[in-house]
Length: 305
Ligand SMILES: *[C@@H]1O[C@H](CO)[C@@H](O)[C@H](O)[C@H]1NC(C)=O
Ligand SMILES: *[C@@H]1O[C@H](CO)[C@@H](O)[C@H](O)[C@H]1NC(C)=O
Ligand SMILES: *[C@@H]1O[C@H](CO)[C@@H](O)[C@H](O)[C@H]1NC(C)=O
Ligand SMILES: *[C@@H]1O[C@H](CO)[C@@H](O)[C@H](O)[C@H]1NC(C)=O
Image 1 (cartoon, rainbow, N blue to C red):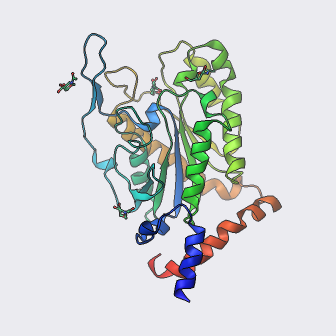
Image 2 (image 1 turned 45 degrees about the vertical axis):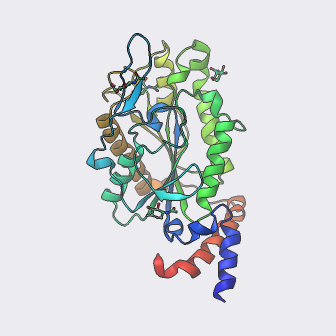
Image 3 (image 1 turned 90 degrees about the vertical axis):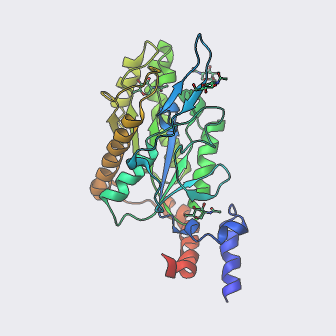
């Protein structure tokens, strides 16, 4: 009986290799969050450029504030598709070729766990890539596909997709045309994510840009604040300190931002019963395989949950 169940388990978690199955924590992930966008989501807190005369020589100071410390209840999907204990910098194996520092993810997760101790194990799925514009996140594009693929993999373990955390827009402040199209592109992106992940009311918590290098910050910000989709919350980066590079928010700003994201997310939890429409037939059908794998995991790992 037991070997048979292991076989079922193996076929349901195809993306996990056998060695990882020994790590019970993989199946303990109950709450999955996607982290996406550009560098401020990836995290540049504590990154300084020591180069002079236009030479770029960046290092991360390695300072991890208490709010961003690792916690056995907070895991991270690695680039190699395994759950590992999350630690700063969260995007180091995802946002390649850049010096990553502190982002909002750890502070967010620690804050959720602290404010709702019964919340359960969190699985973060980092997907942000520095310097990207929203066109590069279009459905079918490389970044989008990778985000969906990673999230689907994360969900194979049986957890619930809780929210998309999105912090982007800087790259779309350069031309008036991009700034004008931002609202349309943003809405289209959120709708595609919800559709492709079969989560039609997935909460989206996004960050409104406070300042930018490009001239059209105003339009992008207006688009972000004016987005009229249900279950999208916006937290405002206005007032958060930007670092010495004039480009990225600081470590302490990231701590604060993570807490704001957590508050906004927890608010969706208390209001969700009112906001969520009744599940449609299609949604229920498409969720069926997930329930099945949940069931198998429950049987097998019930004692560990
Ligand atoms: C980069 O900056 C660090 C810190 O100031 C310094 O130790 C290192 O030598 C620099 N590297 C280069 C290649 O300039
Ligand atoms: C197993 O889980 C622990 C703690 O959650 C983590 O530190 C470790 O990296 C995991 N091992 C693997 C192979 O994922
Ligand atoms: C977005 O970025 C890509 C890659 O850097 C670039 O080729 C493209 O022109 C940009 N698109 C817009 C609309 O800015
Ligand atoms: C990071 O966020 C700050 C605050 O919104 C903003 O001023 C800055 O332009 C952003 N930088 C990038 C590269 O997105």
